[in-house]
Length: 158
Image (cartoon, rainbow, N blue to C red):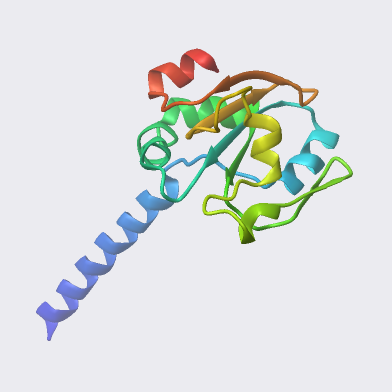
């Protein structure tokens, strides 16, 4: 009985330390466009928008490899508001007094929401993912990137 109690105690200590480790690990704090609008009114900051799709392998790689690096998390949390958006979402988003939708979700095989079309479009080229948009404090596009960026490259850009 005593050995079972000791084993259970050791197990609980290990479990609680693992839980604490997972909770202390820093992550990018993504916000929605609605939260962004409120935040920009209170305190203007630069904005990084990461456009992705569920099927995009390099988008998933950026989540796994880039947006988990402590130096990137720190830089983003201190200097930027960060928004992550699925380009194929069917959600209606109200931002800046306008309503943005994905009108093509019923008629297109790869429907793209209005917001990525507006912010991440290039003349005579289709939208490619991952797309990273960096905006200044006044919400004007400063830089656009349409490729996977390594942690080193993203830090250079930031």
